[in-house]
Image (cartoon, rainbow, N blue to C red; front, side, top):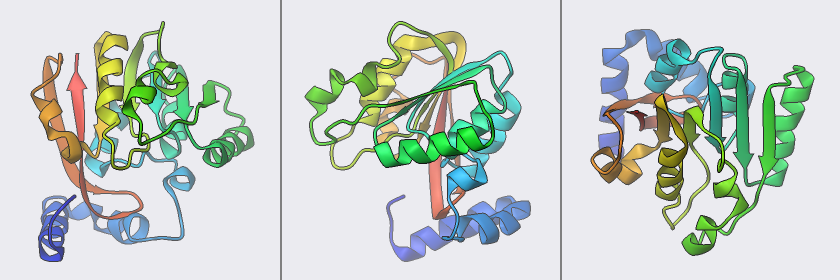
Amino acid sequence: MKGSTGTKLVRIAASLASHPHWVPFYIGKSLNNSTSPLELELPWISLAAIEFLKSYASPSHKVAEFGGGGSTLFFAKRVQSVLCIESHDLWTEKIQTALTDQKIENVQLVSHPYDPDDSDAFRKSEYLNAISGESYDIILIDGFEDNVPLRPICFEKAEDQINKGGIIVLDDSWRHAYLRTQNKAKRVRTFKSIGPCRPGVTTTDVFFY
């Protein structure tokens, strides 16, 4: 999240003060640069949102995710099926290797590169439209974006494909805070906390439909 070094440190202190049992996690899994969310088998989102998803995800759920990694393994072990949409071939290979090594067979992994600087082309891309024609109980939006805001486009698409009673999970939601009021959800919950493999605090929003 944006802010001065002092502001960021205050956020970390506040997050850990309100959840002291997270301190070992922060030291071992947030500050540790030698591991990755894929190795931890955790989504690269806020820890508070991860704890929510641990209790929310069900064996009957169908999941789609824009951007894969640790979240792919996390969901695969908890739900019926996962559609993982990636944009980076090398990262796709790493995810596939992890799935193969663990003999996980309920994941459909696809790789569709796109130009992150062209929002018009992105709207027509195979990446965005990979979820067309299906509906899902959980849709995670955590794909790559740089200077051009692409996650709101994914969010717009996800709202068309989410099942009644389902949720859309938007990571780094502070970048697109306006979506908290511009959506079709029944309610929105913001999870602000530390997370795996990141030194600072982030927000992950969950939209309930």
